Image (cartoon, rainbow, N blue to C red; front, top):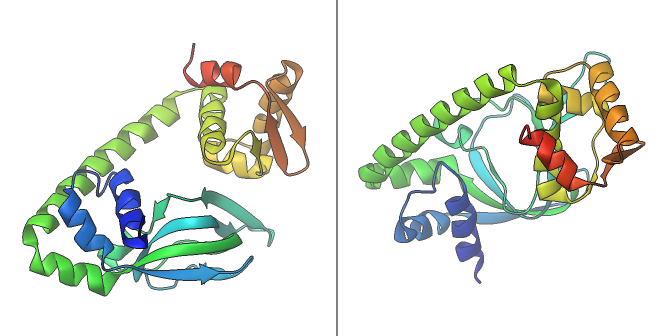
Length: 224
């Protein structure tokens, strides 16, 4: 499979592009180029202009921000097949966090100026993108409401299941970072993890969580 075809597949998996036809996806993916990063190399910093959309071909990108005590907090992990920067490629506003390569990484890059030029030539695609963005806003609003109403064990289990689907049963994340993901204090997250540890659902190691019983964890996530 060519790199252009690979990028088209990644675009197809993203809600913003999912309903576009295969020909249109191929034309958009034809605008991309690739970029390689070494371990620890920064892709962009908070405040940089949002001038591109990125798709991970291989490797891992950490989305990070600084904490008040000077430490770094990882907000999200982007692995192969993940797309990020969709909003920035449209509005061009500054980045809200840092992006750093956690391992040797190859990215697909779609520059904002190339994408906007394409939309100017294809106004029907621009209308479709607007519709897809509206759907995404509605979906995010529903998820936000859901997360606020669900108790901590369910929110935490869902986050761990999502991470496991991307990175396997060994999840490299701190309890503080998990707390940020689910909107809870580190102490509350630790208490719940310790309960699951006693139940054999997981094991805790420094900076890592080993998921040992995905069946039970998935049942919690589904509120079963």
